Amino acid sequence: MKKRLLFILSLFSLIAILGGCSVNKISNEQVKKTENDLAKYIVSRYSDVETITFKKWGYSNETGYWGVTVIVNKTNKISFSLGDRKDITSISGISYHSDSFHLLENEENKDDSPVSISKKIISNELKVDLSNVTITYSSS
Image 1 (cartoon, rainbow, N blue to C red):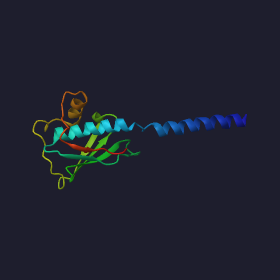
Image 2: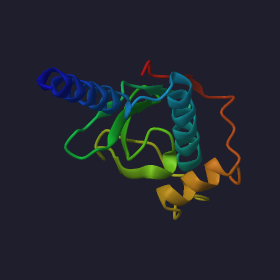
Image 3: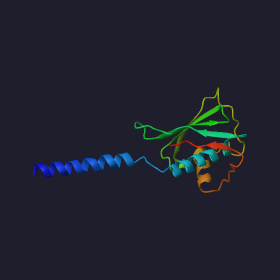
Image 4: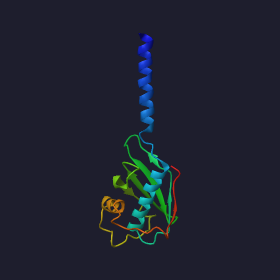
């Protein structure tokens, strides 16, 4: 009886551990799609974007949010916080240091919220051309 109970408890523990490990895993293709959508966001929001480099994604156990830092035109750092790496409409925060971020906002999207722009990108309502932008994707 004790062996059977120990076996059942061990089995449940293993399932819980494996299930917990896979909660935040998504495919590299999905991460690349999200980064591509973030690149569209950046190009639609700011003028004269030539290069975009995505750094490694990080996950905060405390907040449950994902974060990524993006380097635009080699010197402008901007960080995004998302509830889910699968969908840019889960943007919960965008931050940059005003002393080192020198990109100018596009007038046409200046008053739109990040979520509003993100929804337009996802629905293809907002067409953004990335053909003149060099993008370096993260390896996450």
